[in-house]
Length: 513
Image (cartoon, rainbow, N blue to C red; front, side, top):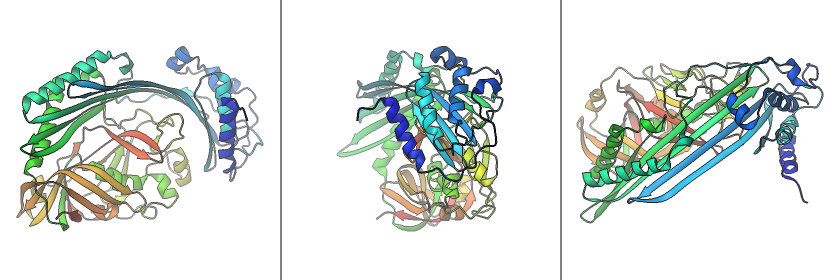
């Protein structure tokens, strides 16, 4: 069969929606043949209107079509993303990449079911075809109404005027060459330097039938380097990186020097490292980077969709004690310029802070609009998606543990034998029960209450909720890790950040000799 792209889009989405045509009562609202008549005249984003002709009339027509068969509410998500990467290996450019992503996703929500379609073009007929596909989820009795809408105002945690798309690539290449030269000048045993800068200017607009117009413009970037050092016949490698929602000018000489020094020091120390004894030992998880274990082994288990489906071990533990009273965990979009910060989420909910565990008691999950309706609570601003091709899901932003009351030395002092884990890599987590394995890239032995030899080739193996329950001390040295973290879930990747103070866990399985 020779189908047009539009026919393929509509047929594919209709087939997907057809399996879910259940549990939606018809809306009592009257049919809106021309939704623009019932909408307020609030302005839409000048960006999408001036560049692509996405006017109020277009928005109303497409949103009205998405709700033409009924449904509880509808949503449009417009996106224009420009991204680039430049990579340098041993002073030579090995990759120079740029790309553009442009499109619109449309969702019709009917009870707990959702119909979804998307278009890779902004032609009105293509947008309407995507809306028809999303509308197939509804029972086809009456159209739903569209509330009066107004542009959402919110506090900004990054500068919407930044434009990475205007970056002269020669500046990026010059920066990477400078980093390569500086690193080699600091250590004559370096045999390889790899440096990469990546950026992404993500401009989005959300328009919903329940009264929201929201515009955002996120200026992501990350800078990372890896060094390989040969000392005698032994070769070791390690790296460092940092990332923000900021401009190229945020990459200051001071931050570059700090990254170079960290990469070299963390590589050098591996030549002195030993393997600890394997077994169940007390473990001190260091401030900052240990937040990856908090994110993976605990944070995912607190995303509401897993709990709604009873796939998480936390599904039956709301308002129950899950940790000692020293432990408070939260997820926030309010960290200024942090990679996981959100002025507004991908459903039009303003950025906010959500306390998940308060003094050891589970208080909330991370919600998008659908899970919030299921639990009868307000959305927490965690509805996120990789792009317009995906519908949003509950996802983390900046996941952190609050400071405790102890000095770092107190955590170490009473340990006869254990390990201090500072940085991690190559983690694996089974999200439902929270079982994890993490490779410790940099760490140290703890012997007789003191930090001694550096360690290498170490895995820690445990269960997130069990580890959470075994935290006996929380230090007062909170750090938000500066690295460029990306979180994957159900085939979607989104930028995130994390942080925590140092904590003492009474026992974790340590894989050693």
